[in-house]
Length: 154
Image 1 (cartoon, one colour):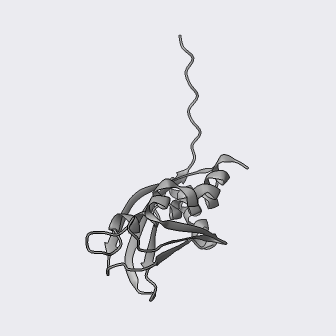
Image 2 (cartoon, helix red, strand yellow; image 1 turned 90 degrees about the vertical axis):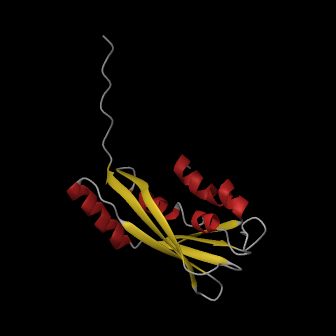
Image 3 (cartoon, one colour; image 1 turned 45 degrees about the vertical axis):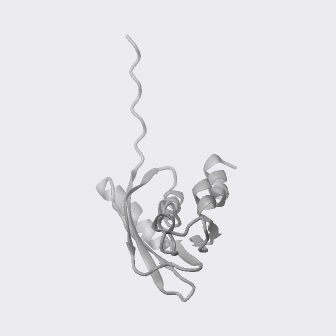
């Protein structure tokens, strides 16, 4: 098993996830994260801490897209924002999926323009399926350029 595959398998054990009580599950075409309200992620008002809500959404779109595009592309997070819509109580969850057609469009745009900055939105939902927060992620994608050869010392 290569290093990247191993890291993806160990993602549920990532310390920031464990510390906030975030659970992670691999789906056939993406990921799902969930978190129940506990002492570890409760804020002053007795609702989910906003940083934990963001943490449960942070890495997934870039991981999905980087895996889909493969080593021929650089794929990074560029920007993110979160909008809190209602207090989070109880268990909250979010799903992260990118349609194969969208991955293909991103690949074509990056090849044609030299880079692209796709935008993805994830919704954090509570047990009643009401939206607690929306996280917008802007990624940066470009074809991988091999490193320039090093000059020999004179």
